[in-house]
Image (cartoon, rainbow over the protein chains, first blue to last red):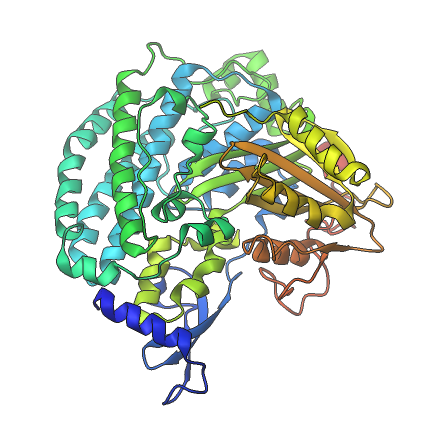
Length: 410
Length: 170
């Protein structure tokens, strides 16, 4: 599908009303379960041949009432809920939640822990972008890159496993830091990943980024202008692809991001190709950040802040030390001395600004917790982006927006 | 660049000068300026801070509801988080609504992105956004006849007597 063709279709659909188009208008259900949509999304399309005239979305198929659930759970039990938002980059969600609570209680986090968090969060971002970009490849018919990159994603999951024991829904870290220090095995695996991955990323780049067929297929697919993207409250790579350099890591640095030197890549057209290239560059920048964090990781073996009222102690200490047993009991029973207050905290998730709006009334559970879920907010622009496009481009647009069902429906 | 940084006090002063009585209350929890605006003026305030050349608070970060059942006459709050990407300044606006009159003007005409956020708030709290183009439930089923995020709906069976809230919380 050439750029020229996509544009002319776009023009036609804009100038013709439904009645004046010759031929039949069909209604087509794209989803809720369809292999091409990578999740549970329903779009009822009005199509004339291949052209999409209009579409209506239905969301909420996997709504699990996280915000309500959170109102009955003690703070340390909310982290597993956040896993299931954007499950492609759970560690970012977990750490974002921990940092929200730390902001509420005013905890001071040691530099070393902040750097460890940066390493984990950037690994998660790489994993998230790898899935998105390789799936864009699959939707254009290039399956090779996908199978190639998933092997690398596997290595990132092994790294998470080394830290927290889990792979997908990680529940990594705790309020105040991590459950254990990075092991020597973790460092060895990270080193080998940092050595081998750039080559494989380069190969993937060679497969797609300058590939004529891929460029023709993705240029002009699902475009959005910068102004429109801002109106729709776009964030993250999708906003940056449209040309706005908004990144929470730079705008409101958290976890010592101000110590690292990296650039924010931006696109110009806000189409699928730009979203792809922005994510590719972000992967490289993340690698760069990880290198800096590993090289400058402060000496020592400190892996959590000294906040015994909130940080769940290690099991050995609980069984052998009376004080730790008391803290353990109080935390598990939800007796943390939490202040009253309301906090908004946001991190740069895989899809952009992931916000936590927390109101605490001093009770054992949040009075109200709202997740600002980037997917939910920008997915509403989807009908506008695909109107006038062929159906195959609608599939591409969906995967390049990286709409994750878990984050969409919460 | 000799650009003047926005401060909490400065922005609050500008808001007070412009809207006077409509600015009910203000505070800065965790250094985020939180301004309570009277319900009927909310739309106007959001439009003004967006178009004001000195503020340029032109990005809607988040919109949601809160239920305070014990606060008579102010049972529901609609909370807006706004962000000025140019000045890197965040602002939180709140409007309180009484249970008898859960209506507030929609801001979809200012931010298209508010569409689903308002639908979600309607879905969970039953707050009516006037002039909203399509105010239907979004995450829950259409036939649902209650608003689940209100505090009167407990997560567990409220008639249970074997669990004491003093020990297990709400």
